[in-house]
Amino acid sequence: MQITNEHSSPHAPLVAELYAAVDAMNAGDVAGFVTEDVTFRLGNFDPVTGREPVHRANEAFFQTISAMRHTITGIWSIGDTVFCDGTVHYTRNDNSEHEVPFATRLGLQGDKVADYAVYVDISAL
Image (cartoon, rainbow, N blue to C red):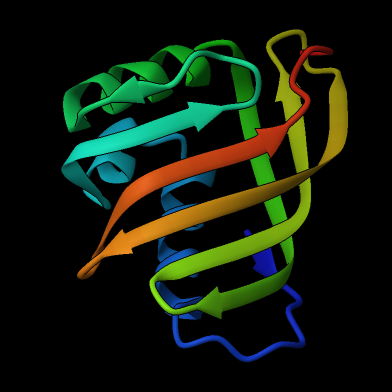
């Protein structure tokens, strides 16, 4: 994970830690960032609600690829909402490469994510 963000956000450390867990493909660590009643949506998948379903959804997704790496080019905060965008580089299980833009919206509740939406086209994976 790399952050090339030119904007200052008080939530940049949270984004960095979250995406380090995502890029490590550690579903348990990702689930540690969310509230018990989180709503999570990845791309065109149906949203899931709850920490354990988020853990399972990420675990299942991580099995479909062999690696991923994010370059975050922007982080913006408005109150308890954080937005970030950039590029995600995937390595498929056949070792071919795929890179696409992404954007994420994080609704915070204290120091945890209560609303987690990832806008990315993963149809080519």
